[in-house]
Image (cartoon, rainbow, N blue to C red; front, side, top):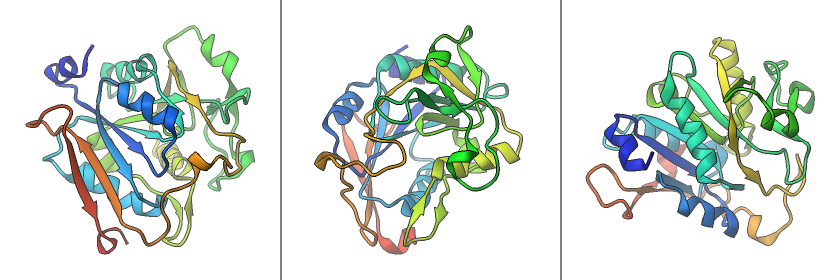
Amino acid sequence: MTAAAKQQSGFAPLLAIMNPRQIPECIAAFKKLDVRKAWLQNYTEWQLQEVIDSIVRDESIHFTHLCLVSDDCVVSQQALDAVLGLAQVSEERMPVVTGYCRLDSTHPEVNITKRPLMGNVPTAGAYDFYRYDDVVAWPREGLGTGFVGFALTCMSREMWRRFPFGAFGSEQQAWSSDFHLSMRLRDAGVPMVAARDGYVEHVKETWNQLDRAPEKRLLISYGTRCDALFQAREHEPENQLIKLAFSNNLVG
């Protein structure tokens, strides 16, 4: 189903790309996707809390579901359609649907878990990850997970109001926003489902370590402003970009 057809059916997803880096193969893949996009640029993870909250609360930005993705993923249309397809089926049964990726480009495990997160601190021991081979061979389209890792994580606007984007840390340094959300969903008893066919390629070099490739360096620093580039509000051409700037006094 095309983006236009989805909107005609009443289902209007918006893909929000957390985009502090310019990774060529990832940018190229995002641009090919048939979906409305918000490019979230020049932010810190702490600042992004206010940015996403502003998007969710701004009713002039038309969408029913916000799908969040990291900028170091190569996303195919098939993976996006798998996630959005499950999200469209039943919000009561599947209020949170996510795609998944390997922990790094060659890791045998993926960023969805067999059980709820263990504890309230984002350490390596808190996760019981699935293996990639087990997920792709899963007999059903969806499987339960205790963790959603922003490799296409989709919730309705109302769910984002109830469970806003958050992070550990402070304005000076923030981390583990995916754990922060998954922990709150766990505590509220909200089911999380991973789409079996929602696999995206992760260009991360080594899990839990900073990437060294020049194109993967962050293009922001703390204290910079944050921009959100919105593609096509409801009343404007699909290829038009609208720029909303969030100054420091709005984000911190």
